[in-house]
Amino acid sequence: MTAQLIDGNALARQIRADVSGRTAALKARGIQPTLAIVLVGDDPASQVYVKHKVNDSSETGLVANLERHPVEMAEADLLARIHALNEDPAVHGILVQLPLPRHMDSHKVIEAISPAKDVDGFHVASAGALMVGQPGFWPCTPHGCMKMLESIGYSLRGKHAVVIGRSNIVGKPMAMMLLAQNATVTICHSATADLGAMTRQADVIVAAVGKANLLTADMVKPGAVVIDVGMNRTAEGKLCGDVDFAGVKEVAGWITPVPGGVGPMTRAMLLVNTLEAAERSAA
Ligand code: NAD
Image (tube, rainbow, N blue to C red; front, side, top):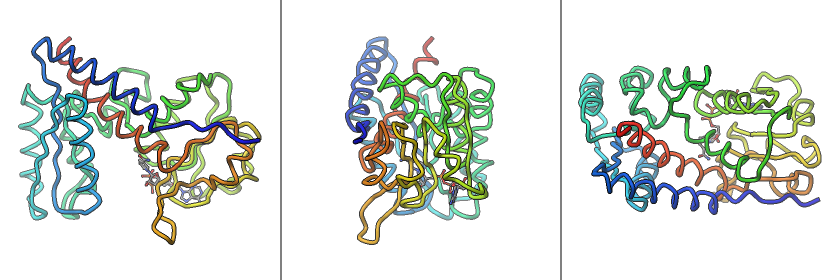
């Protein structure tokens, strides 16, 4: 069996086109959806990520204001800056690029963002809203995975989904989103005794660990949907996921590639969240 590919690039393109249209409609009403991106320090990976976020935004008609602060910025000054952005009616979304310098408490900083502008969905209020099924912002990566499942018309009702990884930004919110669609959900993690015994029962597997080749063909039930969130580098420096793609694609029914899978969807969902923040403020 050869799995069908879930093309994250193609789906992200569709989502961006939808964002462009809705942004134009808001602009016609005099509202310019605006994202404030706060970068502290000069972490090289962060520089690349924020550049993408700025470019993605401008391509879809959103405005992204990137502000750079020196690595030695005091935490109190960052908190004051976030409070100012919270109060600014022209700013709809606020994103603080992580990781922050070591002298800062990331949790405290994220909690300073108004939940109404928390487009990354990392605030405790956003996590709580997801948990209890109230409107709020969903973290971009798991939200993008849900869109991928939706794109293939997959009904999760009564299906068994196994999420590998339990981080607050991917694994846990992913599990909540799957549960909300009436899947039966198992969360596996580093202390799971027999990962393969769990994944072999799964109709849907979401791998979000950060270990190349963690999920191999013998761990996958024939026909299962496999979503690969992992981002790793091979010895040759090539980007790869957590899934042994060559092997698993012969067993799975659907599979997401890396690159070109969850990555572009994560980027697209930030645009969706920013637009929605602007739409909600205008409602
Ligand atoms: P994390 O390090 O916070 O969490 C990793 C999780 O994996 C932990 O819950 C840990 O218990 C679990 N784990 C570790 N070893 C395991 C094992 N052998 N078996 C089962 N579980 C194990 O990572 P994160 O921030 O959730 O990111 C996970 C991966 O997803 C990373 O590769 C990251 O780069 C990638 N990621 C990709 C995107 C994207 O847009 N594509 C976005 C976010 C994260």
